[in-house]
Amino acid sequence: MKEMKPCAANSPPLTPLGFLERAAIVYGDCTSIVYGSNTVYTWRETNIRCLRVASSLSSLGIGKSDVVSVLSPNTPAMYELQFAVPMSGAILNNINTRLDARTVSVLLTHSESKLLFVDVFFCSLAVEAIAMMTTDPPVLVFVADKEEEGGGDADVADRNKFSYTYDDLIQRGDPNFKWIRPESEWDPVVLNYTSGTTSAPKGVLHCHRGIYVMSVDSLIDWTVPKNPVYLWIVPIFHANGWTYPWGIAAVGGTNVCLRKVDVPLVYRLIRDHGVTHMCGAPVVLNMLSSTQDSQPLLNRPVNFLTAGSPPPAAVILRAESIGFVISHGYGLTETAGVIVSCAWKPQWNHLPASDRAMLKTRQGVRTVGGFSEIDVVDPESGESIERDGDTVGEIVMRGSSIMLGYLKDPIGTEKALKNGWLYTGDVGVIHSDGYLEIKDRSKDIIITGGENVNTVEVETVLYTNPAVSEVAVVARPDEFWGETPCAFVSLKSGLSTKPTEKELIEYCRKMMPRYMVPKTVLFMNELPKTSTGKFSKFLLKEIAKNMVDETVS
Image 1 (cartoon, one colour):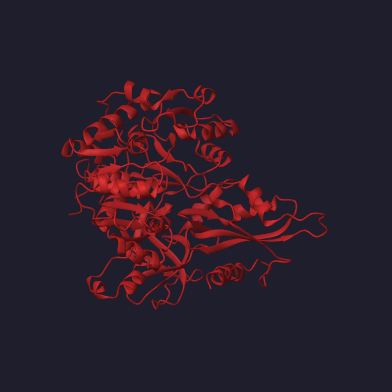
Image 2 (tube, one colour; image 1 turned 30 degrees about the vertical axis):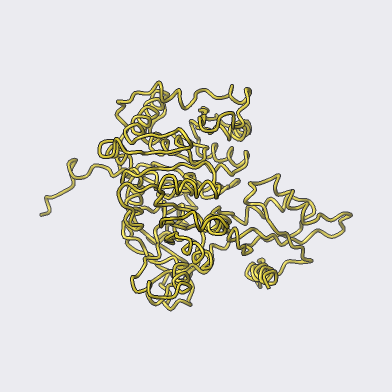
């Protein structure tokens, strides 16, 4: 049997791009995209539109190893570009629309982006970011929105800076274009930035193989059937919408696009289109289940996959009483999607509702596709911790959808990928039944409304204020956002005037994206320190938590 080896017939590169080609054949007349009142496409039309855009990109000289960026909410164009850009051979880079111009400029520079698609409502942001670049800027492509007549922020001066429109690329493109297949399944296909970084952006590179495995795995683990109706709540710029753009194509589903989350509109879309599946952060689930008008509107079960931060049991309980079927998962940008899920056991259905909700707050077990192991280890020894639900350690994992590494950051890559594992930096426990539960996020990350906030970056900005002597930022629990940044500050002595909490918050707003801005600033004469001279963030977290507890009581 030794002579049996891989050959061209049995080892073509895995890629999620083929899902669209198949969908056009199998589900060609089925609805692929619904948006607003008048925009409806079939899978045959979506395939042709993507081929046309890919063809136009190729004719512009865009190809292998080039980065093409997109600045857009969940519109039809944003969905199509998840296929069209890599079908040209390029690497897709979705940019968070909530970032400020300075951060967008840094990401465009770091990625060496060759072309930037810009939604009509983000033209000013893009133009401002381009103006800040000191390297060659990307070519700008304007993406209109027929469902938002007269909307957007693209004035005449801004529009003059755009070389093409999205419709131009569709019109000029070849519908019979032979899309560029990867030479190797290890070729990079997407570049995702972990957060709104400035001085040290972390660009996560994923290959065709990893995205293919995660796309299929996400369908299996969540038990997504053929022809689902999927409402786009989770931003596609967040880890490519957890790979569901490709997954929904694989099963011939209907993508109901939504520019921004509006609770009454969400319920109307659920009713009008028969939505069966949605994904979103716990903060969105909280919004949907808190409205007074929600209960009579949800007249059929809707599957809701939540991830990004542990959902409170009370929110799960409230959402399921309305009719949502909640699934809870855990993943990172570095894993391309949800790689741990709270796999449900039939015997749990007989438990009281409150107990079921508590069980669903756990992250769970590894998913079935492509993951050899997930573990919680002692960060010093690397040995597995006791599976007793109390002993904490660092969560590590390895599998087929783990990132290739961080772009232009060999040191960061080496620190994250070591000893055959991805070290997540997240702290957790494993219960006696084998289910994982996160006890704390990485010490320098706050997750607020599904957005990652690096506390070091917030601290760096606050340190630029001439009145600030010491600063430490920690997470403060919040019923709505999950967590919000809380800054502990000591001021320099001898100041003639001292800044107020409001003034420091306003100072931050001018320097960083709004979601990163501290919601609370507490002044101390001196910040508490450990024996090694570091700030005692554990103590500060307790103070922030007690503030919440005192408010509640």
